[in-house]
Length: 289
Image (tube, one colour):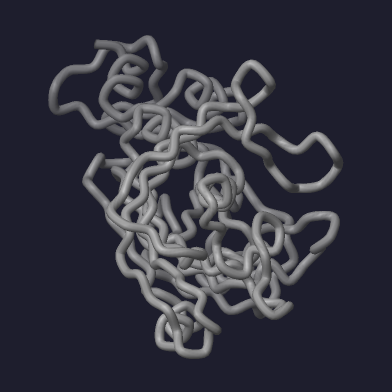
């Protein structure tokens, strides 16, 4: 087979990335000698594809980051709540990206920071960063093929029993706010599916008779605010979610939503990976009220 065929079929390297590697002064070698993608290779040959060096322009800042796992392709973090993932108009710095930049430089590395999975500012848990374009592209392919498992834990209002599937389209905002809405596909909604299973029902003594549920959720699609919209749509909004529910007692606290686990295959060698982040202290404390 040709080098191109081997890279595409065996390693999942997209044609776009192969073109980018060559046109952006990358390098390709077979058995240590310069090669072309159309060259033929045999079993036992060694292919080396070198991508051009990339850099990120975020300012390095002393933002605490908790590293779960790291290698040449991936950086997996346990994100704390209350911090934005990357700079925006409203948050120019003080983000996870600024902390990753400092971490990168301390390790003597240089790469473009690519947050492959995304979490809202007030959502905690497993956050995946890719160190190269191939890691990002391969994860997107796995997600499209349904090969990525995203597991969340949430504390919601009301008593839930058993489990089920919420299969309700979600539409992007149309009024200038970040709030998403449930709408039929014919009216602009995108297919959105969330599996849920109740882990625990409890009624804290200090709750004034209110009942809550700890719910484990699995995302089958990846819409923005999907869990928050879906749980509110069935009458069980996430606790302290001011955008989609009510904030009990007017307390200004973050929504009790946590990315508990992420499972996928490594973009380089295909081995199964699984990462977990323990339940943060504020959610543990709420369960003990």
